Image (cartoon, rainbow, N blue to C red):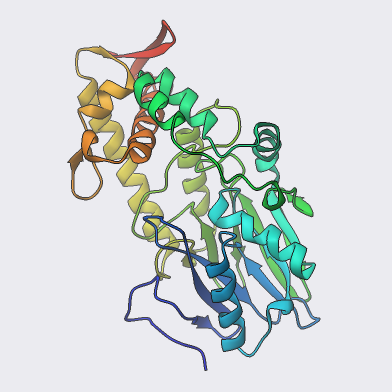
Length: 346
C-alpha cells in the first residue's frame, strides 16, 4: 500500500501518490541541511510498462535502498525504471541516475547547458567548487575562498559523473501517448531544466522553484561568467507564460500553484535588490562587504553566523544582485586589484 504523509514532514520516508500514476519519493541526503531530495516516479507513460523517473538522487546506499522500497510500495520493481530525466547536474540530482543506468540500463537525460560543467568536472577530477571560489575572490572574500579550498574535497567518483544518453534543449519528450515539455531555466545552474506536463497540470521544477526556500544562484561546475541572477529572474518569468500547474519541487512539499510561488520569489529578489543597494549606500564596496551589511536566512542572522559553505553562497549571491543592479544602471562596477568594486549611481 502506498504510504501517504500529507500531514507530516515533507522529507518523511515513504511514497506520496500525487495523483494516479504520479508518485513523490523523498530520498535521503548525506549530512545535508536540505535533508532529502524528491524524485518522482511516473507510471503509464512509456507504453511498455516502464517507469519514468524525474531526478535521480545522490548516489549513496541509503538512497538506493529507499528507492527500492518505494518501487515495491507501488507494486513495481527497481528494474522498471527505464528513463531518468534529470533537472540539473548537482550531485543530489544526477549521480544516482548514472549509477542506476549502470545497474539497470536506464536512459539518462540532462539539459545541454550542463555539458561544459560536466566536461570541466572531468578535467578537474575534484569536488572543489572551483568556479564559486573564483567568484568569491572577485567578491573580495579571498580569505574565505582559501579556507574553503583547504577543506577536504575528496570523494570524487568519476563513475557517477558520466555523460547522459541524451542532451536536452527546449523540446517535447514523448512517451507513448504522453508528453513532457522540457523548458530550459538557467539561473540555479546554466543548464537547469524543468519538465512540464501540461495535460495533467504538473510542473516538475527541480531546484528552479522551491516552495520554502530560495535556491542558490549560479552555483556552477563550469567557468564563471554571465549574469546568473538575471537569467534566473527571466527563467522565473518564463513559468508565467504557461498555464498554472501544481508545483512538484525537488525539495519541499507539493503545492497547488507554481505561479503563486514564482510571484513570491520575484518579490523576494526585488526586495533583496533594494536591500543590496541600500547596503551599498554612498560607499564603494566589494560584494563581501555588502554581504556583511545584510542579514541572512529566515532568522535574519548576520553573515558571520553562517557556515563557511553558506557564507560562500551568500557572498556570491550578493555579487549576483549587485551585478543586476549594474545591469539596470543603478550601480557601477570597476575591477580593482582582482576585486569587483561597486558604487551606487546617484
